[in-house]
Amino acid sequence: MKAGQWDPKQKKVVVNDILIPTPNDNQFLVKIQSASLCHSDLHMDMRPDYPATLGHEGVGYIESIGKNAEGKGFKVGDAIGTNYFIDCCFECEGCMVSNLRCETGKSKLQGFVADGFFAEYAVVDWQNAVLLPKELDISRAAPLFCAGITSFHSVDSCELKEGQWLAVIGCGGLGQYAIQYAKAMGYKTIGLDINDSQLAMATNVGADAVFNSTTNKNYVEEVKKLTDGKGCHAAAVYSASNAAYESAPDVLRVGGLLMVIGIAPKPLDFITTFDLTTGRYRIKAESTSIPQRMKKAVDFTAKHNIQPDVEFNKIQDLPRMVEDIEKGKADKRQVVVF
Image 1: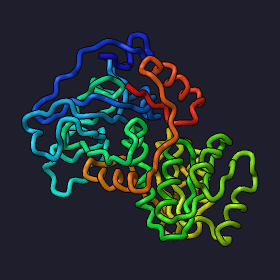
Image 2: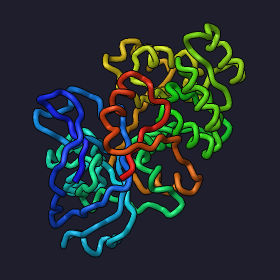
Image 3: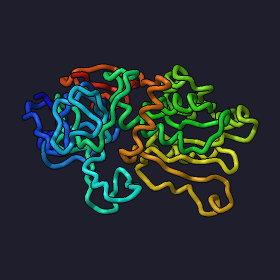
Image 4: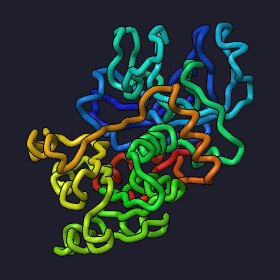
């Protein structure tokens, strides 16, 4: 089968012919319909020193079922999506393992591993799979299984009430998902970014207002004017920029919530214990999280017909897709359809 892989010798992404993987007794073999590129696929420090298939956002159809995965609510031919946190032991009652850490040490993280989703076939642990509702277009659904689910969790955890204001800082793929989720939940949204094309996309998906935080020197005052002079009830940062985080408290009202999602390269030095203890703002964080939380996000997405704006590609385009994202040329989610 064709697979898009990281080649450690050439230090670049290539398309190789490799063997179709063999599932174990707890897994499905999945014929991949589509896979999408995530910014975290570009993290050089996570790439191994051996050829590895990229991709942790993928959807497809079950081709075969391991003997221990039978009778779990799935059948051959089902359309599924999957969380990339694999091999969970599920021994912890009310398991709250994050997607980067396991309390037992028995679970492994899928991302830059040998069975990523930029391939014609992949193996998936049955515990990490969820049925795709028929309302979702499977060719456009791959970004849901990282970007979408992360955005849903972040908005859902902002503790907002209908009619309250959410600032979406960083209006790329996750931010655009977040705006759609927030609108479906009845919140008002303000998109903040330094890229006018991303702000245009934010407007297209329903943002009530957008501001370029670089070119509009008065954007903080304008945000507060929109929000009864007080600021937003919550601000969710989807950018991986430290500068984006540093500007977030300025658009919050007293006691507002700072939601941390984007993984910045440096510590958030602006946070002080005084600000937290005196209630200037509060802090929470979210992630893709665990498989047990997927269904709520997937069902909500289908119910409200929330779909990302994507650009379809072929597997041969993957090296160019990676280059475009590295250079900031990609406005839409980049998807490979098999």
